Length: 455
Image 1: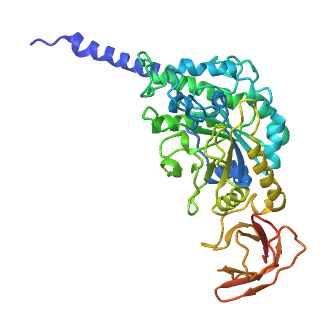
Image 2 (image 1 turned 90 degrees about the horizontal axis):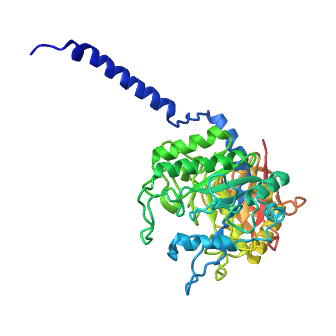
Image 3 (image 1 turned 90 degrees about the vertical axis):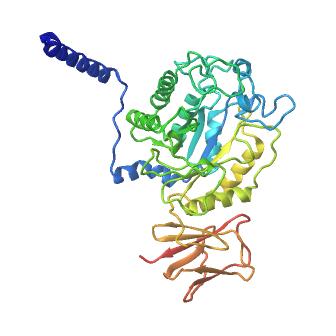
């Protein structure tokens, strides 16, 4: 067959130029985010305030505070009530008309956290129900446009945090049961998914994240959640992580931004997954994890407000959990679910007040400390700071002798942190040391001994 010079010469050139043009157009119009790289020193500097803080307040608040855990004859709901009670989205939206928390006082909230010894606050900017506690230009399903309250809660709270020297941080849900483009739909709902485009939802979510990171000053942490459904993947998580840090390079982001979290234990591999810290939920690891982590926990059994839930952890239990977590190198993010009026439940206030009283005396043994040097202490826990070791005594020995196995480095002095003027005798043995204690424990929850070491 006779060769056609057009097909053999001109056509390949035309196809080549066409492909090149399509590639150039695609690269110019693709929303790409440069990867944020940092040295170990830069990473440590970025994480420094968070590691020093050790104790923060989690706030779960939204439309779900209105039913207060109750729907029809069931009383075990909270922030998941839209799906646990299988409430149609259009019906759930009606809660917005009733959301008018006139007793909300940002100054009081921040002061309560600060007096409790907390150094940062993480509040739900948007939970899984899709409702926003801030004024967003991308939706009217927010506190400013959809409620009679019409005030930007995050603006008031962030301004007050900046004023009082507390780090403001935002929780933001990747999952969104309200947005028409979020997939998958709940199994029980009849809302059609026809025409829904998940990529369009991701663009919306990133737009809201940009609002959060650029409209409220310097943000300490962006705390993601709801990443476990199949529509979210490792690539999307990495893209979102780097996008957020391109907007505010010093921000800290948890591991739930991407894939890799191992369930409620919150563990992950920092070498293969994005995120700056692990997120154990409602549990404390048996030991340290070898990387930064933070246990988030409720005071009772629910994150959002449930008026029927009276299963409160005791003051002693919460203080000992704080010490246990910090002794293993972690942070403690303790939750409050405010009422629909905008108030912290009284049992929460009482517990925070007790923790603050303890921290006023013993905060030195928490802030800026590192994990225990001792593998196991039957009577309590320990933390470390430069030339100091802190011994946290949960159970006061009846014989008034505190055995510290493995303590062989002679201390310059030993004293009760509650009373630095005290001087405790130490006897050193081959296996460790014995400290002579006063007859009674100075603190009803956790008593602390400080050991000053020779340089």
